[in-house]
Image 1 (spheres, rainbow, N blue to C red):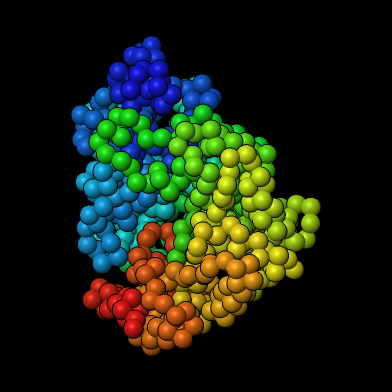
Image 2: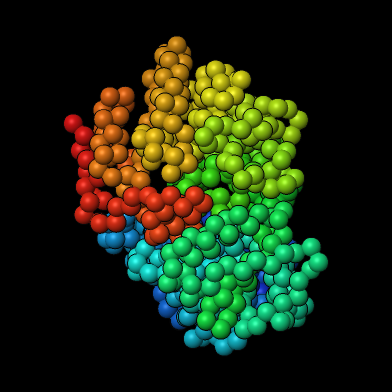
Length: 576
């Protein structure tokens, strides 16, 4: 590929740096994914944002050792390190702890490029090559391991990844605000203390400067949570209850003779800022350096998709999105989304289909709870055991659940767009709670490609309660109404479900209940069945490790034997 085309990407080789007439880079981002210049890839998104603010940015994707780290030289400001879009241990191992053979984020699809505990490994390689360079860690792997945490793969409680990696600072959650402030401070020679959305460590709290409006809360120490599961649960509960941007709380956890310090979360981006972020000059392609090694499957599912919303107030027990993106839902403007659609339609390979418009939960687009936006998340869940009326609110009306449908219709009206589909999560309970339910369901039929994928996750009431998911009856009601609407329109479209087995609370009895529910009500053998994997940072993992609910103290049955966990899945997928 010619240099002019290579220059459309952020540089990833020495030749590209020279072609841009650069002597050095300010920031070098290291990732466990291939370099795909698309906003759904965190490194591309942050790299483009830094570039837009005037910084010289390079990317080293899937390094295989210290020599790869050398290739762009030493950055003027810092190295930013992430495992990629996926936790490296989740990417490398199945729920049965077997090594995965494939990786959608690696050229050629072979899982041979991402090391276990990639963040720690990459930082180690950087430190071997460059002494005293600033290192910032972030992304899903670092974010959810910022305090002492249970590690399922080693079956032990590990220290904060900030200490294990020996990085300088950790960015948690969505990192745009934090990464820009870090760059500004390092460039100005200032301290990195006190940046919202970050975690640092100190050997003493005497040097910790507290603003007048900030509160400091101590979590049980690393030593305490290692030796006492009640203390582990207490630490998790305190963390969850105080990780709201509007609460302005500093959390501290002592590890041996050091203190891990979490500053308050960064405020979510405004709509204007989110709009800007997704309209930066992405090529929406795999960088040729990596494409030469083979196709990257992950780009195919997102190349012609649109992120419309960020954040989720679903609070599912097994999901890390709430802890990572917060419960504050931010929607892009319709104009911004339509502008991005026009960009996609101009790509030579566009064939008329927008494969997905959504986010963590697509139909939260346009919703804006007045209480959550001004005071933070309530102690009660927005959606379970029933949907709060305020959860349906928009900025200018009491029920804004139809705004997502109106958005899809506007996307469909763009020239060259023939089909628009919803491929990401839909909360059917939100739709059923709306006064516009019939209209929304009927309209969704037109934006479904064959099958509408929902996530009831289970059917047994007790397991669903632990999961914080709506009742199976609501799933069946939605399925019935959707398929009836499709039949009226003479369209063969159906609802299929995703399910999780071996989740805390599920034993043989609950598993049989799920099997009989599927046999009676669904009429097919589900293939979308996964075994629960205890990943750091979730309520379900805390229950898995401790054996009880950290909020109520209720003891909960947990199946930990891999052989039995596998059998629970086989009981569902081999349904006849």
